[in-house]
Length: 81
Image 1 (tube, rainbow, N blue to C red):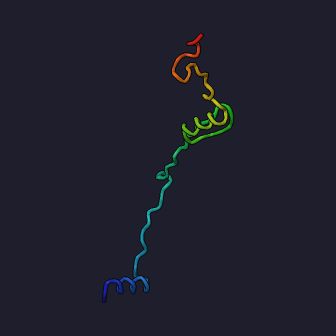
Image 2: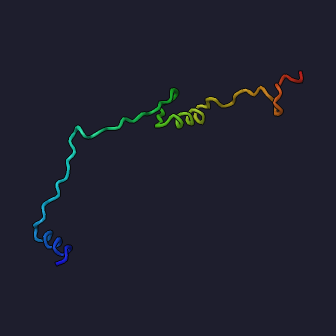
Image 3: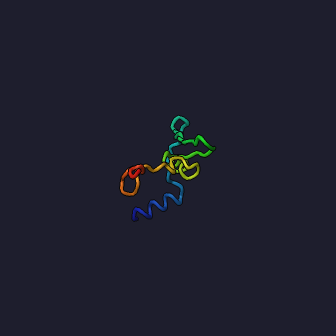
């Protein structure tokens, strides 16, 4: 008999032992801590620093609208008087 047929017959007639699966004990389970970055101005929480920075720029306009001290040619604005 071919081996596939023997295996099938053993499984069909119940001669195959059950596969011993490993059970997880409680000490093996590791819980990953989730780090969140909280906004100081509202209740927004971001999983990344980049997301928090993007939120602060778009929502709270922090770091936007800095005064320009140079003109388009790189000279100070008070260059001509």
